[in-house]
Length: 383
Image 1: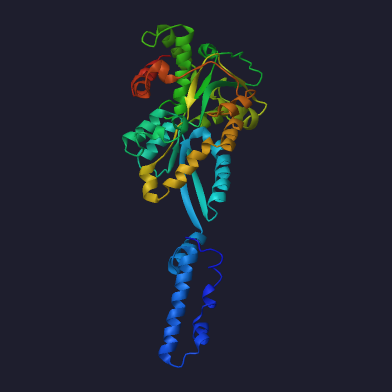
Image 2 (image 1 turned 90 degrees about the horizontal axis):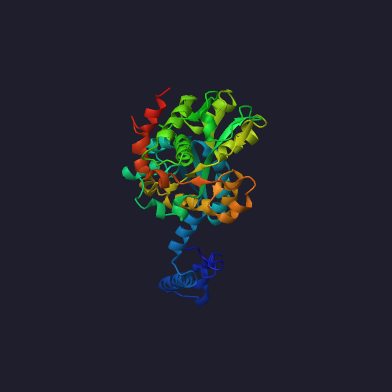
C-alpha cells in the first residue's frame, strides 16, 4: 500500500523520542522510558490511522512500487507479420508504461513459416504468445498441452484480431496479362509460392486456388475432376517452393524469378510500396480465400515465468483502436468493421470463402491435403 503524503513527511520527527520526553520533563529513567514508549505508540497509531497499514508494510510496499521491473516476452509469429509487430510493439509499450510506469516490457520476436514456428514451440521454444496464421497450428499446441482447449474464447472474435486474403503479385505492367487464378495454369507462366509443408501462407495459396477451381467449375470437393486438372497444371508451373512467405517474396522481387507470386494481400502491398516499388503490380483474383490470423497466450510458459498478465495485455491490445488502425495501414483487414470501412480504397471488397466452409475442419483439411502422400503431394508430382 502506498503511504499518503502526510504520513510520508517523516511524521515521526514531530513525535520523536526527544520531544516526547521533553514535554513532561520526567525526573527518572523509568519515566523517560515510559514517555518514549508512549511516543512510539503514538507514531504507530497515527501511521495506521492515516495509511491503513503499519509502517513496515508501508515501507515495503513503497519500495516495491518504486522498483523498476523488466518483463521479457517472446512473440513467436508467422513470416510476413514482422513489419506489423515492428510497429505494434512500441505502440503497446508506450500504452503499457502509462499504466505501469515502473515496468518495462522487452518484446522479442521470432518469425518463420507458421507451421514451422508452431512446431518449434511444440518442441520447446519458450513462447509467451503465439500469433500465427492458421488454426491447425494452434491445434498442434493444444494437443501438446501448451494452449488451453478454449483458447479461442479468451479473446474477442475467436481470438482473430485481423484477417487477410490471397492475391497475385505480377511484374510491373503485367506483361503476361494475368487476371485470375486460371491464368496460373497456362503453360507460359512461372509461379513462385512458399512450401505448403512449412508455411501456412502456402496452404492458403493452394486452398485459394483449389477453392477457386471448385467455384469456377461448379464442382463439389468430393468429385473435383476439372479442379484437380487445373491444380495439376498450376503446380507444374511452380519453379520454387520457399520455406516461408517472406522468402518467396525475396525470390520474386530480388532474385527476379517467376512471372507471378502467390502471396497475402498485406505482403503484396508492402512489396509494391516498399520492397519492389515500381517493379510489381497487384492483381486481385475474382474469388479468393479468407486467411484468419489467430493469437493466444501460451499459459504453460507464462504461468511459470510470471508473465501471464503482461502477455494477456499484449494480445488484448491488438483490439484497441490504434492497433486496429495500424493493422489497416499495414494492409491487413482489421476485425473492427468501422476501421476496415475507412480503408476501403486500399482494402477493397472482394468475394471470398472460408476454408472450413468448403473443405471441412482444419483437421480434415490437413489430413486430406497436406499430410505426406496427401492430395497436394499427389497433384504436385504430376508434370
